[in-house]
Length: 207
Image (cartoon, rainbow, N blue to C red):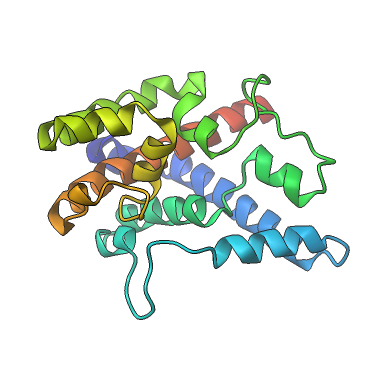
């Protein structure tokens, strides 16, 4: 979904997305407030303060490359939740609830719904994903063919580039500010579009 489509999105659709985001935030807050769920509290706090490519007193790369308009901030917010591990996927819900909740994806009912499944594997969002992956592929291969091969031959590296291109696990050659800005623009749009599509499917399943 490009910027023109987002601007034309009806208020009703935006309300649905925000409602789903609010439900996710409420669920995480409930996890923290549940007295007998010590594991859940430790998991949320540890993910919030997990080591990232971040130095004290600096702004993380994906925020530094985020515009000041409400749409850019909304996209970055979704990515921040994924990066810190508090975006509510079934694998998170399962861990937070001492594995009493299934980690299987509620949409495909086939595989565990973790970050990799959500960003790279869930088949029903392929049409959305395919709007962004070719752009990312072109950026990386045009920059350096060997780096393109490295990223796209290893899902864990690709996942890291999508989530945090400034991570130490990402090839340092592509970590120039201007190039990271281009990658962030693509991956931020991809993460948000996948989030919006997932929310829409969940809404249909629940209705």
